[in-house]
Image 1 (cartoon, rainbow, N blue to C red):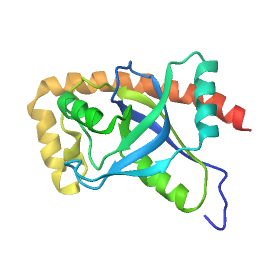
Image 2: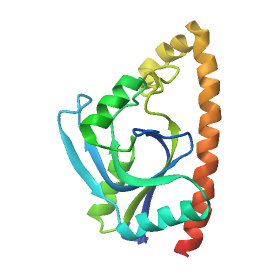
Image 3: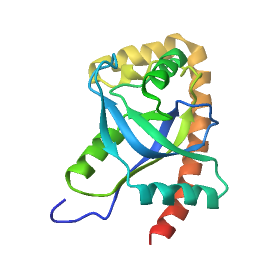
Image 4: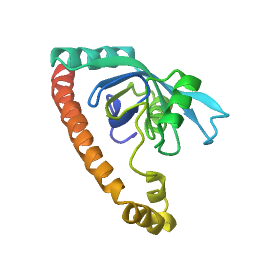
Length: 186
């Protein structure tokens, strides 16, 4: 980062909604909480988002006529795939959305004095169960378990198809808002 100074750091992509939302709704971060354990016993503030960038993200979404809200994110070390888990984390953290990366990106940005913001689109919803436990694909040793879980439950294939559609919608929305956001930044 010393050789190539950065003007800003953006954590962007897809997120799980922790508030009543629709697929593709945009979440603009004000702060990011994180946890070091899966039991949510140690929650800490990992990063504060730059207010100007947050406002610019909201403005870009509004200018494109896209639903957006600003608030707290939480980053977890694993994918929450059950609606009951998502509701518990929403209650415990007061976060509007979750992901796995924003805390690390925000912490690095803060360490180097780089303005930081989170801009993500909802790819799955608060009360929605994912078609399978995607954590099985996080560790190379568990890939066969994940493949077996998918192959042994044909209904999961329909769920994967649903997720593909949801991710496409969310990706289109995030691309649209970024076209406007980057125009505004320039």
